[in-house]
Image (cartoon, rainbow, N blue to C red; front, side, top):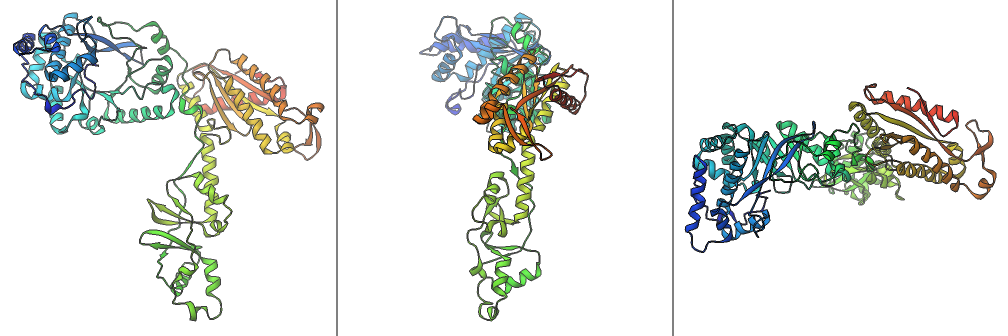
Length: 621
């Protein structure tokens, strides 16, 4: 990239010479030649005088059809010289105070070179926001239009890639400049969006045709679910603004697969093509093979999801409050007016400081002579000054702590709900139990709390992606045999250990790029294989589990070959070691429309496998 963010150390410190942007290439030559008359000519001045800058071109690839969509021009200095690399050129420009002249020379060299080659496709050219503003303000968009026309470049094939946009102080004036550029038929792109300095407001105000995502968010995206979520958010914004996205910095096939399946329009990076003096017409073999794959990738956010849920919609009681000065008589009148109210919060301004339990207070208030002696006294004598405070946007663990606390007052008193520290209502013990239960169930649909593997919702989402792309895959439903008697006999701690063993062994048999593993619930797992050797992987899973599960039994059970336990009818009988059954169905792309259909077939295959007792059973579709 010619002008990355941070190039100009102090824009105001550079004396920006009036650009000699003429109506022909000669206009540029005159401006650069004038530098030779300056005393103490520096190395970069000499390069500009000799017009020895030249561009190389890196392809920008359409990730949908694996074609070369455009090229970005990247400037180079004389070959074999200290100023050959972009970094060296940028340092020299800053040192010699030639920022503006250097940019103009880069733009001139790029346009001249591209016009002479007469190649198809669009051209992305870097230009800082400051230079673009000065260029259009001093010369007008018509001068730019005539220049590119004289060079044989169609304006609709040129994209000005705005750099240094984090230094824009007057967005309105830049928007006016952009409007003039766009009226000339030239498109706009924002470079390095998301690098911490770029502006969402600039995207909204300029509405560029293209936004290039900073490589921080694309590098190793196949391993980071948080980066994937960021890209998904940018896709939503791009859809609002009708903007095409370019993912920069694609260096591996794994990252390319994720970006391809996310629906990013275009990509750029070394895996797709290195900068080259000659523009390329066709994509390389490796990249084309990846983009042509029918398989889909397993998104990193689904491979091991977080177990924590959020309780944002907990039911609140919009209850009255009291202050430290409220009397016992006034509090009793409040409880009489609100007969179902279990407690009252004591506030200091808007902040809760205590909680008074109704039953405990009324028990004291109803005693003989209490009203006469204590009726006008402050009610805070009955307050619990250590109430449980819960922020409205809190995690499940905050409320689970109440249920597991040794202080059971919290179940009878309930809890106070705050928002940014301010009182918003009360919650009861019953609401607490119900909210925790509902949230745990909902969280388990996304991520199983025992194995942290994706739950039913991610399983269905991944299956829908497979069906939508008409991928051929094997849906395998794994279930344990004789698990309930094992769990009853040894207890749920040992049962959980058995389930985690199956999860670990199943994960070992999955290709993380191709195969998806989800935990349906209990001892049921779903494996969605795109690996062609799925049968071997499934058989290995059965063999490994059946061998290692024996180690979870005690020595007496190992000697007997199993345990004696009650069956589902309460009768004592012998159960052999716990094993696993895997029911499989091979799904041909295009035959099904909904994930539910595939899930039902896999469940039927599981039942067939348990009846057959052969470990792996493939059901014909």
